[in-house]
Length: 126
Image (tube, rainbow, N blue to C red; front, side, top):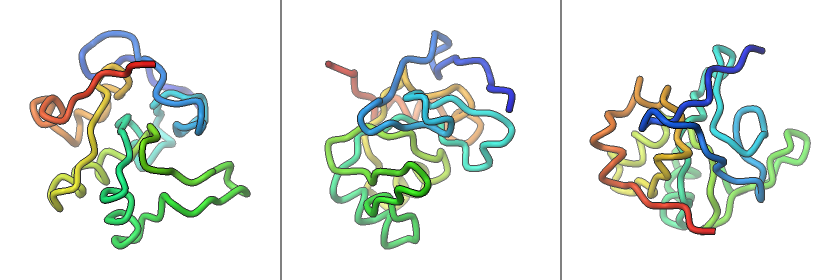
């Protein structure tokens, strides 16, 4: 699989989203993507209970661990590379999580306008 260039929505280098839990389409801690990533797992979000419950109710269960897919389950307060279309769905449902722009891949802009992402921007503080 050829990975797209690691560029964020601001045009800079893509910063890591989370290594605990290990996230990303490539499980490299970053919201990297490629042509094989049909879900566009490109938006680095801060998960909230309300958001996670809304996703589960709409058929995208991010809470339940799936060890066979190296998926630990996401807990409130954790960062996660979310599918761009799922973030947009959450926005439309009034439960959009905050976004880390420096860790959100530029391909997310194919689905979500930058101005909208900026309204939910938060900085990573480690």
